[in-house]
Image (cartoon, rainbow, N blue to C red; front, top):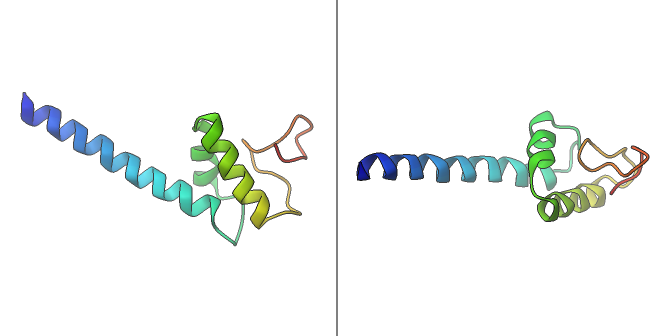
Length: 79
């Protein structure tokens, strides 16, 4: 039983590290704010992390339309 719990814990931590790294690479990239995987990860994060990611993207792409998850009320402004 202990070995199964340990295995599940390792899988969860590895998944968090993998998706966390993908998200961080997405919000700090300099090529495009419209990477599908990054947008999906950013959209499901808690509000403070999503806000930080959107602020980083807006800093890197100030003239681009915001991707899903970073849009304001009108859909054209950054949150």
